[in-house]
Image (tube, rainbow, N blue to C red; front, side, top):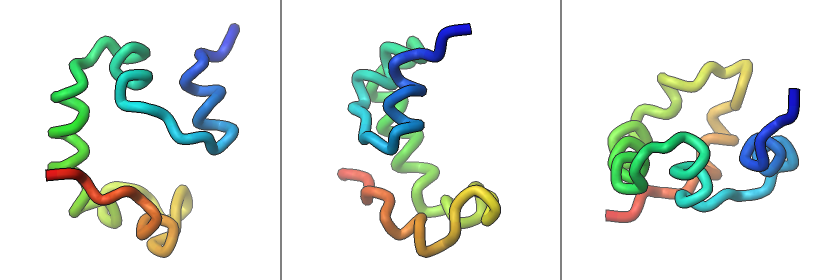
Length: 65
């Protein structure tokens, strides 16, 4: 099975634009931005430590108001 362009970008550690995510998931850009803004403060609780350490989470971009 072929991997999508988005998954290839993410697996290579390249940043991705919200538009890319929106296109790949068929979710509106505004919905993605709002979800990120809502979930960002809780990232340490949501993302398991085996996947990303807390110091790694500090590298996440702060959501724009």
